[in-house]
Length: 328
Ligand SMILES: Nc1ncnc2c1ncn2[C@@H]1O[C@H](COP(=O)(O)OP(=O)(O)OP(=O)(O)O)[C@@H](O)[C@H]1O
Ligand code: SF4
Ligand SMILES: [Mg+2]
Image (tube, rainbow, N blue to C red):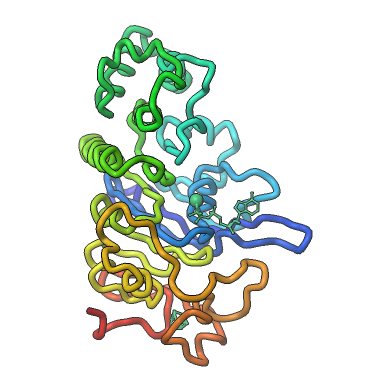
C-alpha cells in the first residue's frame, strides 16, 4: 500500500439475487473510490441498489443473494478474498455500518453499556474494563447523549428513537473505524435532530480521519455533508465526482433530471422524487444504456451498447451524450 492508495476502491462489483426466473443483477458493475477522511454520498431512487451495494462491501449478502464479481480493495487488500472470520474481525472495528433502523444494531435484551463494552472487547480483548467503560461514556457524550454514565445502565427501549440512533452511531464510532457505511441513518428522524446528527458525524469524521459512505435519498443532506457524490441508477454508478461540481454542473442526464425535478433539491429534508418514467426491472434489461427509455438525449447509439465510464474534469460518468459545455 502506498500513501496514494485509496482507503476503499471498488471495481466491477456485481451482486445477483437468484430467483426462479433467473439471476437479478441488483448491483451491476459498481466502481467507487473513497479516500481517508472523505465523505461519499451515495444517492439514487428507491431500488437503485444503494443498500445492496453497502451490504456487498461488508460481505453481508445472504442467499439467495450473492456477490458474483468485482474487487473490494480496502487499504489495498481485497475483502472478497477474506473468509467470514477475517470479515468479522474487520466489521465493527475497521469498518462499521449504521442502519436506518437502530434496532438492527442494538440488542433489546442487553443494557446499552453491555453492548458497547462487547463491541470494544470483542475486537480488543486486552482493553482494561475501566478504560473500555470510559470509552463508552465518551462515545455517548460525543453523539450528544446527556448524562452518558447513567445511560449505560439502561436498555434500548428506555431511549427515544433519535437517542437510539445516536447510540448506534456511538457504537459505530467506538473503535475509531477507518470507514463507516451509513444507510439512511437519519431518514426516520425529525429535521432538527437529523441536522444535529449530521453535524456530529461530520465533526467526528474530521477529528478521526474516518471516511464514510452515506446512503440517502436526500440530495440536500449530500450537499451539506459529503465531499464526493456517487449517483446510482439501476445498479450502476452513472456519475461520480466532487459534490459542488456534480450538483452545480451535472454531466449525466439522470443527475440533471433529479436536480430539475425538485427546485429545492439541495436543501436537506426533501426526499428524492422520481423523474418521469420507470426504472428498468433488472431481469428484463435490454442491451444499451439502462436510462434510455427515460432519457431526453437518447440516440440510436444508446440502444446498441452500454456506455463505459468516461471522465470530464473531476467527474466520472457513463453516458454517450453528456451535458458538457451546456450544463448550467
Ligand atoms: N433479499 C432480496 N431478494 C431479492 N431482491 C432483492 C433483495 N434485496 C434487494 N433486492 C432487490 O435489489 C434491488 C436493489 O435494492 P436496494 O435495497 O439496494 O435498493 P435501495 O437503492 O437501497 O432502495 P431504497 O432507497 O428503497 O432503500 C431492488 O430491486 C430490490 O428489490
Ligand atoms: S447514454 Fe444515451 S440514453 Fe444513456 S444517459 Fe446518455 S444520452 Fe441518455
Ligand atoms: Mg436502501
